[in-house]
Length: 175
Image (cartoon, rainbow, N blue to C red; front, side, top):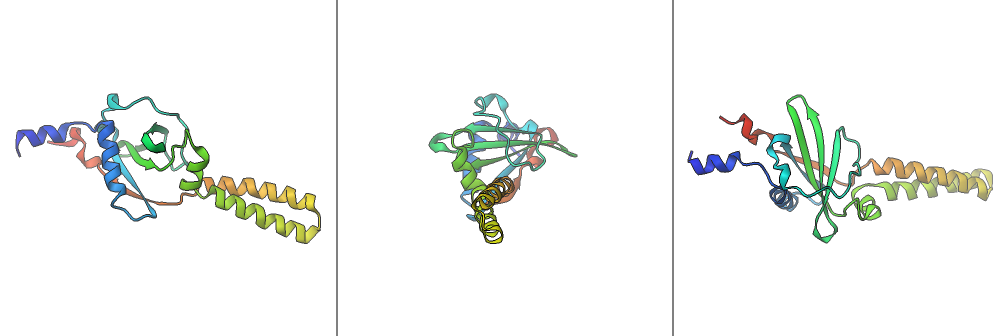
């Protein structure tokens, strides 16, 4: 192996490189899939990253921390940090709408919060009205169901995660 290739493999991933890889990966997965790049924490050149847009957490999938970085066009790069038996890893994906600047659009695109909330609220309201004949009971029950539906839907992604594991490229593990 040439020295040039070894040097290139030993470099850490910059903000721009992580964004570019995710852009390429997202273009190669099915529309119902979300491309996720998994990297060892030590593989990332953190000094090249801007300050996070906000620390708004994503849906709880076991991560210890979240960071979001605004991109042009209203998109964002979302990083999630995990502790694994093999070490600390970061999983990154692109969000179509930045959760920090457009939370409603993000929730509508990335989760089922809106559809679950509306479905539950309307369904329970109708049932409560039919059973009781009371608009007040229907409104109360529908409001509670709306909140519950939004809560459940906010933790239900619209896309399946397709993870591309780059942890084996960790420079510290190479000979």
